[in-house]
Amino acid sequence: MRIGIDGIPLATPKTGIGHYTFEVARELARSRPADEFELIAPVPIAARPGGAEGGPGVAPANLRACVPRTDGSLRRRWWSFGLPLHLREQNFTLYHGTNYNVPPWADCPTVVTVHDLSLLLHPETHEARLVELARRRLPVMTRTAAHVLTDSESVRAEICDLLGVEPERVTAVPLAARRAFCPAAPGEAEEVRRRLGVREDFVLFVGTVEPRKNLLTLVRAFDLLARASTLRPQLVIAGRKGWLTEELYELVERSPSASRILFTGYVTDEELCALYSSCRVFAYPSLYEGFGLPPLEAMACGAPVVASRIPVIEETAGAEAARLVAPTDAEALAAALAELLRDDAARSELAARGLARAAEFTWERTARQTFEVYERVLAEHRPRRRAATA
Image 1 (tube, rainbow, N blue to C red):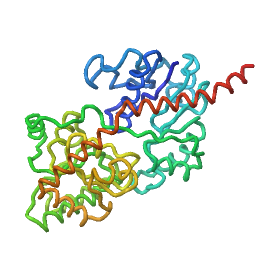
Image 2 (image 1 turned 60 degrees about the vertical axis):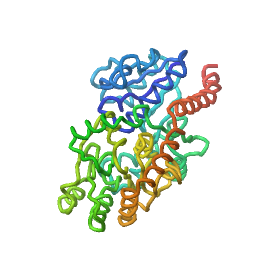
Image 3 (image 1 turned 30 degrees about the vertical axis):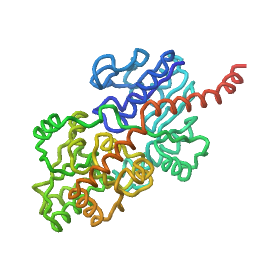
Image 4 (image 1 turned 180 degrees about the vertical axis):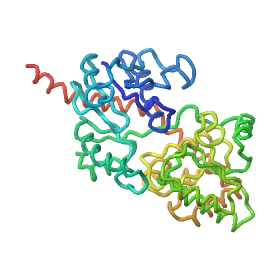
C-alpha cells in the first residue's frame, strides 16, 4: 500500500497542523512497516523526517519526503493538476490531505482532515479573504473527499450540521501531546527562562496571537488580578504574531501591568517544554478550538491549567483535569488564577490530574484510528474500481 500525505504544513516553521501532519505520518509509518508513506509538497519541506524532530533516524525508512519535479505552471496549479498527476504517475493507493485540502480529482480515494470550522463560525476573528475562501472551498473539499477526519466529536457534529456531511462520512480522531512535552528539569527550565527574560513567578499562554485565542480577556483578567490582590506574577504570551492584533497590543500598552506582560514570539519545543514545566499556571481562554493541543501539552508537562468552558476543551481536558471558566468572564478568570497562584496544594492537585489526563492521549492511538479510516475507505472503493475496469 502506498499512502500520500500533504507535506505543505511542513514547509514552514511548524504550528499545530504541521505537528499533526508529522506525528501522524511518523506513527503511521512506524506501525505499518510493510506500507510506504510519502509527504508530498510542491516546495521544499523544511522539517524533513529524520531531521530536527529528534535527531537522525527518528522517522522510519518507509516515510519519505517528496518534492515532485514539476514545471512552474503545474506548481502554481498544484491542487488541480500538479498533485493529481503525481498521484496518478506514482500509483498511490490513497491520499490524505491533513490541512483542509484535497485535489478536486484523483485516481485514488482521498481523505481530508478538517481541524475546525472557526472561519465559518467565528468569521470576525479572521481576515475577510480567508473567510471567503473557506466558504467556497470547505463545502467542496468535504464533498470531494471519500471521508472526513476531524480532531474532536464537537467539531464532527459541526461539520455534519453546518456543511451537511453525512455522519457516517465523518470520524473524530483525537490528537495527543508530543513526546517532547514532559516535565523539564528545574535547571533546564531556569536557563530557558533566563534566556527569554521570563521571571520565576509567571502565568503562561501558548498559541498564535490572534483574536480567537481571546487574549483581550486574559489581559483584562491579569489587570484585575493586580488590582484585587498583592499578587504580581508575569504574564508570558508565547507564540508567533498572527492577524487582527491591533486591539490587543493597544490594550497592553494602556495596561497598568504592561511592564509585566511579555510577548516571546515563536519558541522552540525545548523552550515551550521549559515554560510549560515551570509556569505557576497555564491560562487558555480561547473562544473556539478544534481540539486544544496547548492545554494538553501543558498538562503533560505538569502545569495546572485554567481554560475556557467550551465544548472542545471540556472534551479534551475533562471536567476534573482543568479549571474551566466562561471564556469572556474576565473576573472569573482572574479569580481562578488568584486561587491557584495562592494555593500550592490546589495547584499540585490540578497538575497531577492534568498529567494523568494527558497520558490518556497518544499519537499511536491517533495513527491507529486514522489507518482504520483508510481501510474503511479502501474497502468501500475497491468494488467501484473493479466495476470501472470490468
